[in-house]
Amino acid sequence: MGQSLILQPDEKVSPPHPLLPPGSALYALERGPQVQAALRTFLNTPHPLETLSDPTAYGSEGSILRDHDSSNYLKAINAVLRQQTKQMRRTHRLHRCHDWWPLVASSSPSPHVAVYTMDSPPFPLPQREMAAAVKT
Image (cartoon, rainbow, N blue to C red; front, side, top):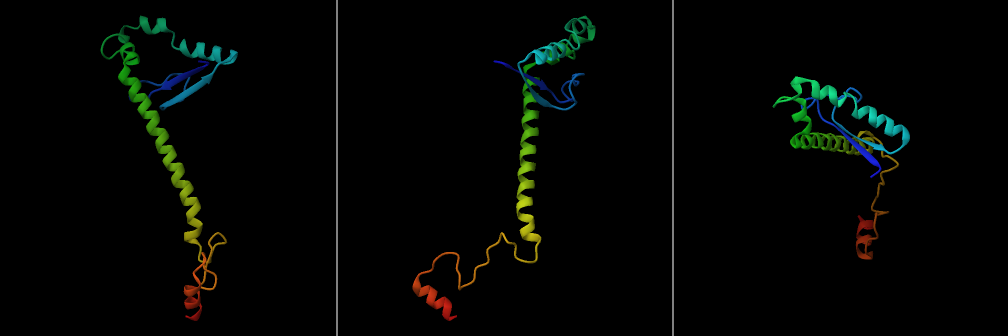
């Protein structure tokens, strides 16, 4: 309670609402006096009586059936989830490229790359292997 969610379906499923940008999205509105007025305006655009007075709103292709069909809600939620998943993958891929590309593209050792020799191994070697490594 205290939060209203507005689900905007894709244009293929339903025409966009005149007060929302096109494209599928899920909008969350917190409660407050200004939000209440905006929500009231949103719900009354177009006014429900305009929709009911339109003869094309009825029937199998009408907006009443389309807007109250539960499978359309599932399609809209899946579209939003797919969009978010793509965005998360894209962001993850960009971060990964941003982290690795300087290491791959540089010809000189980066300060972030530690170069170890046999004189200074990255982990302590047993004395026997250390002596063999120093001799060679």
